[in-house]
Image (tube, rainbow, N blue to C red; front, side, top):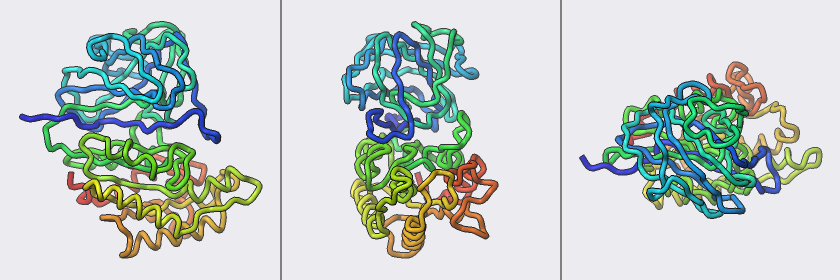
Length: 382
């Protein structure tokens, strides 16, 4: 059987040096950083990727280790193996670059939790990071790479170094990339359960799977938080091995962040024409690469607790863009009505109470499930 490398886990990353930050990064010095990922699909081998894309100095990896997770920061020692890089146990990742480990010749399965430990002997500086990792990470002093549990441990709520995983799967295996903002990334869903709506949708598929390239706070047209969606297409979609479909949710932060950042002053928001032009350009770039492109309506956010985010102008633009998306002139192969899946029937510009995470902007696990269940899985002919 002919096999090829296919993405089975992805983490979109943020620059810790952005001028406006909703989330704080950090650095590590003479510490072991332990993070867990969940494979969306399986194969006969696995390799792990790391990113120093936004680091200002070379990243020194004093050792790396892969094992099956037990609970929390615990690992099964019998499953552990050192990761190597071109045969070496250590590596240096230049600033602005990524690194992929040598393959680990071990069968892995969908849903399996793998823990990646890094020993970071020097001062990393602020790291390339993500706001919503699969689960809480942990850091501990010194080299504890192969320890079954870490000693003197601290929780790390953010993800670091953009850890991803590829699996060696049968040639012809195809996957979807979920691409967009916090509703894609799964902000406010329970850590460690993979309950973002793309995660829950992926578990409904009978062929292939979905990897997540969401960034909380991300926008379509404007950089920060993260590079704008139109700027990260090549890296976060087209470069993902095995991608054939793209699922997009974007627009909330284009409408809400300007007012939130400027509060209490007014802010200029993009018009419906601006967003429609941007979405059309995005669909065009993805179609040009031969991908199936599935859009979605912009979710409701009336009454959110974030000051300045909810404005009458923004709500009017959202309604106009959603009407366009639900019409017959949009450029997508299909559109998922995310908004209808979670809207309060009596107040459709608000999230339904039992689906609201509590901030009026994000859905909880049940809300994410409602979106996943509303998707026609036949759209994902992977």
